[in-house]
Image (tube, rainbow, N blue to C red):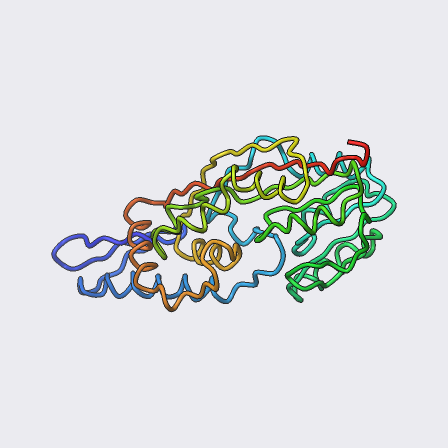
Length: 288
């Protein structure tokens, strides 16, 4: 919402969600209106459901550029040619549900119970086994159970576990968060996080994969653009992408969120830059 006072009478003109309102009121009420808008936007975002990977709540309130490689398309192609596959951290199963053809054996894991229930309802009718698994290895599958393991935006990458689950010659195909992802937003809320960002560096990810016995086939990063048009969109995003600000709730950050709200009001948007990494790793054949 944008507000301004017009004329000596104290007439206030303000814009909210594309609608213009005019009222006669003392000038001091202008800040009250803006303060209520901030609190309402935050409360709305905190009450919104965040299960799964459906971001339709942000329609009209935020935009995010997608990587050029088209992860879901790549994943679909690999799944169509696989015999047994596993999706780690499937969320609510939204990405996996977009696949046209599953292999004869298709499993998915999810650690958060609301997401696991959502994924079960979405994927079971298509023959996918959804396993509610702890958010730590080992996963409840036998050694060398899969020729393809996929994952989109894992919070932690269990390279040793991935290597255990893959058959010789099998592939891990994933899209990871990249170094300094949405760093402008993170720095505004909690300050720089160099140790966290260092974990996402391509050199660190590659070294961890090789230490687990995997060969890097492809690893590339793109820096993208995201825009937020109100503070509610920011709060919802931080609740949804839990690696951005761990254990995020709005109350401890009210001052910084209010400052960001005022910045969005003044500039019309807040721009930050997600980074995404495409990873393809292969478990060597026994004869290699």
